[in-house]
Image 1 (cartoon, rainbow, N blue to C red):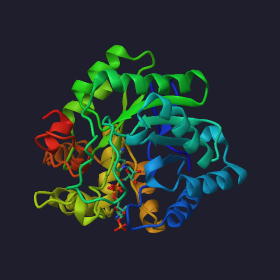
Image 2 (cartoon, helix red, strand yellow):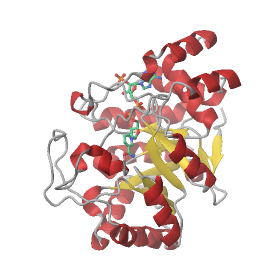
Image 3 (tube, protein in one colour):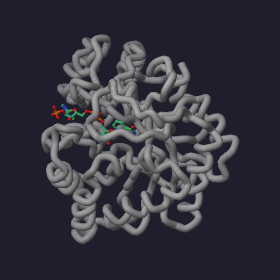
Image 4 (cartoon, protein in one colour):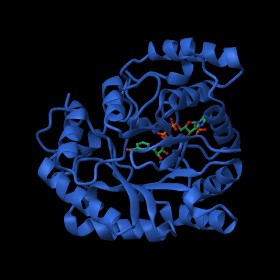
Length: 323
Ligand SMILES: NC(=O)c1ccc[n+]([C@@H]2O[C@H](COP(=O)([O-])OP(=O)(O)OC[C@H]3O[C@@H](n4cnc5c(N)ncnc54)[C@H](OP(=O)(O)O)[C@@H]3O)[C@@H](O)[C@H]2O)c1
Protein backbone atom coordinates (compact mmCIF):
# COMPACT_ATOMS: atom_id res chain seq x y z
CA UNK A 1 0.00 0.00 0.00
CA UNK A 2 1.58 3.28 -1.02
CA UNK A 3 2.10 5.90 1.66
CA UNK A 4 0.43 9.31 1.23
CA UNK A 5 2.98 12.10 1.63
CA UNK A 6 3.27 15.83 2.34
CA UNK A 7 5.81 17.90 0.47
CA UNK A 8 8.31 20.09 2.33
CA UNK A 9 9.80 23.33 1.03
CA UNK A 10 12.86 21.41 -0.12
CA UNK A 11 10.68 19.23 -2.35
CA UNK A 12 11.28 16.20 -0.10
CA UNK A 13 8.22 14.14 0.78
CA UNK A 14 7.31 13.22 4.35
CA UNK A 15 4.99 10.22 4.86
CA UNK A 16 1.67 11.70 5.95
CA UNK A 17 1.41 9.63 9.14
CA UNK A 18 4.19 8.69 11.55
CA UNK A 19 4.37 6.37 14.54
CA UNK A 20 5.12 8.05 17.88
CA UNK A 21 7.62 6.36 20.18
CA UNK A 22 7.09 8.02 23.56
CA UNK A 23 5.86 5.27 25.90
CA UNK A 24 6.00 7.40 29.05
CA UNK A 25 5.87 5.10 32.11
CA UNK A 26 3.30 2.80 30.52
CA UNK A 27 5.17 0.90 27.79
CA UNK A 28 8.70 -0.49 27.67
CA UNK A 29 11.29 0.38 25.04
CA UNK A 30 11.12 -3.20 23.76
CA UNK A 31 7.34 -3.03 23.26
CA UNK A 32 7.82 0.18 21.31
CA UNK A 33 10.66 -1.23 19.22
CA UNK A 34 8.53 -4.29 18.41
CA UNK A 35 5.69 -2.00 17.34
CA UNK A 36 8.03 -0.03 15.06
CA UNK A 37 9.11 -3.25 13.34
CA UNK A 38 5.55 -4.51 12.92
CA UNK A 39 4.17 -1.12 11.85
CA UNK A 40 6.71 -1.09 9.02
CA UNK A 41 5.19 -4.38 7.84
CA UNK A 42 1.83 -2.62 7.64
CA UNK A 43 3.30 0.23 5.63
CA UNK A 44 4.44 2.86 8.15
CA UNK A 45 7.58 4.61 6.89
CA UNK A 46 7.80 7.55 9.31
CA UNK A 47 8.97 7.14 12.92
CA UNK A 48 9.01 10.00 15.44
CA UNK A 49 11.90 9.47 17.87
CA UNK A 50 13.66 11.52 20.54
CA UNK A 51 16.67 11.06 22.77
CA UNK A 52 14.58 11.77 25.87
CA UNK A 53 12.23 8.85 25.12
CA UNK A 54 15.09 6.63 26.29
CA UNK A 55 14.55 3.93 23.66
CA UNK A 56 16.42 5.04 20.53
CA UNK A 57 18.87 2.12 20.89
CA UNK A 58 16.01 -0.40 20.77
CA UNK A 59 14.16 1.46 18.03
CA UNK A 60 17.48 1.47 16.14
CA UNK A 61 17.59 -2.35 16.25
CA UNK A 62 14.16 -2.40 14.60
CA UNK A 63 15.20 0.16 11.98
CA UNK A 64 18.21 -1.99 11.12
CA UNK A 65 15.94 -5.02 10.70
CA UNK A 66 13.49 -3.03 8.56
CA UNK A 67 16.28 -1.91 6.23
CA UNK A 68 17.88 -5.37 6.10
CA UNK A 69 14.42 -6.72 5.37
CA UNK A 70 14.33 -4.77 2.13
CA UNK A 71 12.88 -1.32 2.86
CA UNK A 72 15.16 1.25 1.23
CA UNK A 73 16.60 3.83 3.63
CA UNK A 74 15.36 6.62 1.31
CA UNK A 75 11.81 5.38 1.78
CA UNK A 76 11.97 5.84 5.55
CA UNK A 77 11.49 9.14 7.35
CA UNK A 78 13.23 9.20 10.72
CA UNK A 79 12.95 12.17 13.05
CA UNK A 80 14.84 12.70 16.30
CA UNK A 81 15.06 15.58 18.74
CA UNK A 82 17.65 17.42 20.79
CA UNK A 83 16.73 17.41 24.48
CA UNK A 84 16.55 20.49 26.70
CA UNK A 85 19.78 19.78 28.59
CA UNK A 86 21.84 19.69 25.36
CA UNK A 87 21.26 23.22 24.01
CA UNK A 88 24.79 24.41 24.76
CA UNK A 89 26.79 24.76 21.56
CA UNK A 90 29.33 22.17 22.72
CA UNK A 91 26.63 19.61 23.49
CA UNK A 92 24.55 19.66 20.29
CA UNK A 93 26.74 17.61 17.94
CA UNK A 94 27.61 14.90 20.51
CA UNK A 95 23.91 14.57 21.46
CA UNK A 96 23.00 14.27 17.78
CA UNK A 97 25.75 11.69 17.19
CA UNK A 98 24.45 9.59 20.08
CA UNK A 99 20.92 9.58 18.58
CA UNK A 100 22.27 8.77 15.13
CA UNK A 101 24.36 5.85 16.36
CA UNK A 102 21.59 4.55 18.66
CA UNK A 103 19.22 4.63 15.71
CA UNK A 104 21.87 2.79 13.61
CA UNK A 105 21.60 5.30 10.78
CA UNK A 106 24.05 7.45 8.87
CA UNK A 107 21.70 10.40 8.46
CA UNK A 108 18.39 11.65 9.85
CA UNK A 109 15.54 13.02 7.78
CA UNK A 110 14.61 15.57 10.41
CA UNK A 111 16.25 16.82 13.60
CA UNK A 112 14.24 19.07 15.91
CA UNK A 113 14.98 21.20 18.94
CA UNK A 114 12.49 19.43 21.22
CA UNK A 115 11.55 22.46 23.37
CA UNK A 116 12.82 26.04 23.05
CA UNK A 117 13.74 26.18 26.76
CA UNK A 118 17.03 24.94 28.23
CA UNK A 119 16.59 23.05 31.49
CA UNK A 120 17.34 19.76 33.17
CA UNK A 121 15.04 17.53 35.14
CA UNK A 122 15.07 13.84 35.93
CA UNK A 123 12.66 11.66 33.93
CA UNK A 124 9.14 11.19 35.35
CA UNK A 125 9.31 14.06 37.84
CA UNK A 126 6.07 15.61 39.11
CA UNK A 127 4.75 18.73 37.30
CA UNK A 128 5.52 20.81 40.39
CA UNK A 129 9.25 20.06 40.05
CA UNK A 130 11.39 23.05 38.94
CA UNK A 131 15.00 23.26 37.77
CA UNK A 132 16.61 26.30 39.44
CA UNK A 133 18.78 26.74 36.31
CA UNK A 134 15.85 26.59 33.85
CA UNK A 135 15.76 29.50 31.39
CA UNK A 136 13.02 31.11 29.31
CA UNK A 137 13.32 31.47 25.53
CA UNK A 138 16.36 33.62 24.81
CA UNK A 139 16.48 34.12 21.06
CA UNK A 140 20.20 34.72 20.85
CA UNK A 141 20.89 31.46 22.68
CA UNK A 142 18.35 29.53 20.63
CA UNK A 143 20.09 30.69 17.45
CA UNK A 144 23.43 29.41 18.78
CA UNK A 145 21.84 25.99 19.11
CA UNK A 146 20.17 26.41 15.70
CA UNK A 147 23.55 27.17 14.05
CA UNK A 148 24.78 23.76 15.17
CA UNK A 149 21.72 22.15 13.57
CA UNK A 150 22.49 24.08 10.38
CA UNK A 151 26.01 22.66 10.55
CA UNK A 152 24.53 19.13 10.63
CA UNK A 153 22.64 19.88 7.40
CA UNK A 154 25.78 21.23 5.73
CA UNK A 155 27.70 18.12 6.77
CA UNK A 156 25.03 15.91 5.17
CA UNK A 157 24.11 14.29 8.48
CA UNK A 158 20.59 15.69 8.58
CA UNK A 159 18.28 16.38 5.63
CA UNK A 160 15.98 18.86 7.40
CA UNK A 161 15.93 20.74 10.67
CA UNK A 162 12.94 21.96 12.57
CA UNK A 163 11.36 23.30 15.72
CA UNK A 164 8.90 21.96 18.26
CA UNK A 165 6.66 23.53 20.89
CA UNK A 166 7.07 26.99 19.38
CA UNK A 167 4.83 30.04 19.07
CA UNK A 168 4.38 32.49 16.18
CA UNK A 169 6.40 35.08 18.07
CA UNK A 170 9.39 32.75 18.43
CA UNK A 171 9.12 31.37 14.89
CA UNK A 172 9.07 34.89 13.43
CA UNK A 173 12.46 35.53 15.01
CA UNK A 174 13.89 32.19 13.89
CA UNK A 175 12.70 32.76 10.32
CA UNK A 176 14.36 36.14 10.33
CA UNK A 177 17.73 34.93 11.60
CA UNK A 178 18.13 31.40 10.27
CA UNK A 179 20.32 30.56 7.30
CA UNK A 180 18.55 27.24 6.87
CA UNK A 181 14.92 27.73 7.79
CA UNK A 182 12.84 25.22 9.75
CA UNK A 183 11.19 22.67 7.46
CA UNK A 184 8.71 21.47 10.06
CA UNK A 185 7.28 22.46 13.42
CA UNK A 186 6.08 19.71 15.75
CA UNK A 187 3.17 20.92 17.84
CA UNK A 188 0.23 19.60 19.83
CA UNK A 189 -2.72 19.21 17.44
CA UNK A 190 -6.01 17.37 17.92
CA UNK A 191 -9.68 18.32 17.37
CA UNK A 192 -9.97 20.02 20.79
CA UNK A 193 -6.67 21.86 20.28
CA UNK A 194 -6.39 22.97 16.68
CA UNK A 195 -4.10 26.01 17.17
CA UNK A 196 -5.49 27.64 14.00
CA UNK A 197 -3.28 30.76 14.08
CA UNK A 198 -0.02 28.85 14.56
CA UNK A 199 -1.12 26.15 12.10
CA UNK A 200 -1.89 28.78 9.43
CA UNK A 201 1.31 30.66 10.15
CA UNK A 202 3.32 27.47 9.56
CA UNK A 203 1.47 26.62 6.34
CA UNK A 204 1.88 30.18 5.00
CA UNK A 205 5.60 30.04 5.72
CA UNK A 206 6.14 26.60 4.19
CA UNK A 207 6.81 24.99 7.55
CA UNK A 208 5.06 21.63 7.66
CA UNK A 209 3.05 21.14 10.88
CA UNK A 210 3.58 17.76 12.53
CA UNK A 211 0.78 17.08 15.01
CA UNK A 212 1.62 15.33 18.27
CA UNK A 213 -0.94 13.79 20.63
CA UNK A 214 -3.32 13.56 17.64
CA UNK A 215 -5.88 11.55 19.63
CA UNK A 216 -5.69 13.85 22.62
CA UNK A 217 -3.18 11.59 24.36
CA UNK A 218 -5.81 9.45 26.13
CA UNK A 219 -3.16 7.41 27.96
CA UNK A 220 -1.02 10.20 29.35
CA UNK A 221 -0.03 9.83 33.00
CA UNK A 222 -2.13 11.36 35.80
CA UNK A 223 0.55 13.97 36.42
CA UNK A 224 -0.15 15.41 32.96
CA UNK A 225 -3.90 15.79 33.50
CA UNK A 226 -5.85 18.77 34.83
CA UNK A 227 -9.57 18.97 35.68
CA UNK A 228 -10.22 21.30 32.69
CA UNK A 229 -8.90 18.80 30.12
CA UNK A 230 -11.47 17.55 27.61
CA UNK A 231 -11.54 14.19 25.79
CA UNK A 232 -11.49 14.37 21.97
CA UNK A 233 -12.50 10.77 21.34
CA UNK A 234 -15.65 11.23 23.43
CA UNK A 235 -16.79 14.37 21.63
CA UNK A 236 -20.33 13.80 20.22
CA UNK A 237 -19.33 15.32 16.85
CA UNK A 238 -16.38 12.93 16.54
CA UNK A 239 -18.56 9.99 17.63
CA UNK A 240 -21.26 10.86 15.08
CA UNK A 241 -18.73 11.10 12.24
CA UNK A 242 -17.23 7.79 13.40
CA UNK A 243 -20.71 6.24 13.22
CA UNK A 244 -21.27 7.71 9.73
CA UNK A 245 -18.24 5.84 8.41
CA UNK A 246 -18.15 2.80 10.69
CA UNK A 247 -14.80 4.01 11.99
CA UNK A 248 -13.41 4.44 15.51
CA UNK A 249 -13.29 7.92 17.05
CA UNK A 250 -9.49 7.66 17.02
CA UNK A 251 -9.55 6.97 13.28
CA UNK A 252 -11.68 10.09 12.75
CA UNK A 253 -9.05 12.19 14.57
CA UNK A 254 -6.33 10.78 12.30
CA UNK A 255 -8.32 11.24 9.09
CA UNK A 256 -9.15 14.83 10.12
CA UNK A 257 -5.45 15.55 10.75
CA UNK A 258 -4.27 14.19 7.40
CA UNK A 259 -7.07 15.91 5.47
CA UNK A 260 -6.46 19.23 7.25
CA UNK A 261 -2.79 19.13 6.26
CA UNK A 262 -0.78 18.25 9.35
CA UNK A 263 1.19 15.03 9.77
CA UNK A 264 -0.18 13.12 12.80
CA UNK A 265 2.20 10.92 14.79
CA UNK A 266 -0.07 8.72 16.94
CA UNK A 267 1.56 6.49 19.50
CA UNK A 268 0.55 2.88 19.98
CA UNK A 269 2.11 -0.50 20.64
CA UNK A 270 -1.12 -2.34 19.80
CA UNK A 271 -1.46 -3.70 16.27
CA UNK A 272 -5.23 -3.16 16.06
CA UNK A 273 -4.69 0.50 16.98
CA UNK A 274 -1.80 1.39 14.71
CA UNK A 275 -3.50 -0.49 11.89
CA UNK A 276 -6.69 1.47 12.55
CA UNK A 277 -4.74 4.76 12.42
CA UNK A 278 -2.91 3.68 9.27
CA UNK A 279 -6.17 2.81 7.51
CA UNK A 280 -7.65 6.17 8.48
CA UNK A 281 -4.61 8.02 7.12
CA UNK A 282 -4.64 6.27 3.77
CA UNK A 283 -8.41 6.38 3.25
CA UNK A 284 -9.05 9.96 4.47
CA UNK A 285 -12.82 9.62 3.96
CA UNK A 286 -14.20 12.73 5.72
CA UNK A 287 -16.51 15.00 3.75
CA UNK A 288 -16.11 18.79 3.58
CA UNK A 289 -19.07 19.20 5.88
CA UNK A 290 -17.59 16.73 8.41
CA UNK A 291 -14.28 18.61 8.25
CA UNK A 292 -16.19 21.84 8.92
CA UNK A 293 -18.01 20.26 11.88
CA UNK A 294 -14.68 19.25 13.43
CA UNK A 295 -13.30 22.76 12.86
CA UNK A 296 -16.20 23.91 15.04
CA UNK A 297 -15.33 21.78 18.10
CA UNK A 298 -11.95 23.36 18.88
CA UNK A 299 -11.84 24.00 22.64
CA UNK A 300 -8.35 25.51 22.79
CA UNK A 301 -7.61 22.70 25.26
CA UNK A 302 -3.84 22.38 25.56
CA UNK A 303 -3.00 19.07 27.23
CA UNK A 304 0.80 19.18 27.24
CA UNK A 305 1.31 22.40 29.16
CA UNK A 306 5.00 21.97 29.95
CA UNK A 307 4.84 23.22 33.57
CA UNK A 308 7.98 21.34 34.51
CA UNK A 309 10.07 23.48 32.14
CA UNK A 310 9.20 26.75 33.90
CA UNK A 311 12.02 28.95 35.14
CA UNK A 312 12.33 30.82 38.39
CA UNK A 313 9.96 33.79 38.57
CA UNK A 314 7.69 32.55 35.74
CA UNK A 315 4.02 33.31 36.34
CA UNK A 316 2.54 30.06 35.08
CA UNK A 317 2.63 27.58 32.21
CA UNK A 318 0.99 30.15 29.88
CA UNK A 319 4.36 31.98 29.86
CA UNK A 320 5.88 29.06 27.93
CA UNK A 321 3.40 29.79 25.14
CA UNK A 322 3.77 33.61 25.13
CA UNK A 323 0.21 33.96 26.47
N1 LIG B 1 7.42 17.19 20.33
C1 LIG B 1 6.91 16.98 21.52
O1 LIG B 1 7.17 17.72 22.48
C2 LIG B 1 5.98 15.81 21.74
C3 LIG B 1 5.14 15.82 22.87
C4 LIG B 1 4.27 14.74 23.04
C5 LIG B 1 4.25 13.69 22.12
N2 LIG B 1 5.09 13.70 21.04
C6 LIG B 1 5.08 12.60 20.05
O2 LIG B 1 3.73 12.32 19.69
C7 LIG B 1 3.46 10.93 19.88
C8 LIG B 1 1.99 10.72 20.20
O3 LIG B 1 1.57 11.47 21.31
P1 LIG B 1 0.80 10.88 22.57
O4 LIG B 1 1.22 9.49 22.82
O5 LIG B 1 0.89 11.88 23.65
O6 LIG B 1 -0.73 10.90 22.14
P2 LIG B 1 -1.73 10.13 21.19
O7 LIG B 1 -1.02 9.54 20.03
O8 LIG B 1 -2.82 11.09 20.97
O9 LIG B 1 -2.30 8.96 22.14
C9 LIG B 1 -1.69 7.70 22.23
C10 LIG B 1 -2.62 6.70 22.94
O10 LIG B 1 -3.86 6.63 22.26
C11 LIG B 1 -4.33 5.31 22.23
N3 LIG B 1 -4.48 4.91 20.79
C12 LIG B 1 -3.55 4.98 19.81
N4 LIG B 1 -4.08 4.62 18.61
C13 LIG B 1 -5.37 4.31 18.86
C14 LIG B 1 -6.43 3.88 18.04
N5 LIG B 1 -6.29 3.74 16.71
N6 LIG B 1 -7.62 3.63 18.65
C15 LIG B 1 -7.81 3.81 19.97
N7 LIG B 1 -6.83 4.23 20.80
C16 LIG B 1 -5.63 4.48 20.24
C17 LIG B 1 -3.34 4.44 22.95
O11 LIG B 1 -3.84 4.29 24.27
P3 LIG B 1 -3.57 2.92 25.15
O12 LIG B 1 -2.11 2.94 25.36
O13 LIG B 1 -4.34 3.19 26.41
O14 LIG B 1 -4.06 1.78 24.34
C18 LIG B 1 -2.08 5.28 22.93
O15 LIG B 1 -1.24 5.05 24.01
C19 LIG B 1 4.44 10.52 20.99
O16 LIG B 1 4.63 9.15 21.06
C20 LIG B 1 5.67 11.29 20.57
O17 LIG B 1 6.35 10.59 19.53
C21 LIG B 1 5.94 14.76 20.83
